[in-house]
Length: 116
Image (cartoon, rainbow, N blue to C red; front, side, top):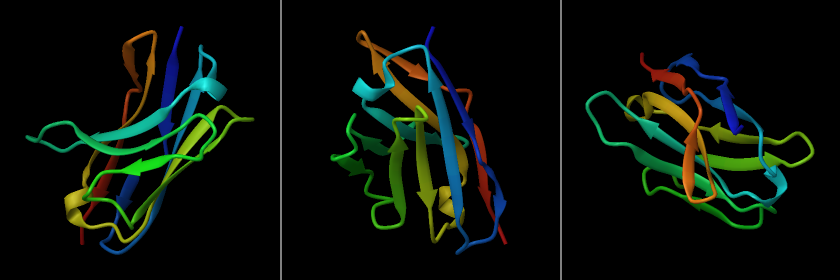
């Protein structure tokens, strides 16, 4: 079955960086688009970034473009989210996601807290 396990969250101060990781299994990772979403308390689920199977196409949400970078390692079946210049508005639970057979799958999420 599809499994997505996020890691790398934590508490940082504004302006600092974090790198999230997502370990994937249970599907053909090398053929899959992968994405990151986030949800802050009381807010809607928000698109963060998406990367194509080969890594050549990367899309970002407006609020993170220029600060966050999505990447992947197909040999490790892993996708990453490098987050720079973090601000309190980036505080949320971050989820790794993929769509397989017209069904969306999500990991359990990893908490990112940005506070001074």
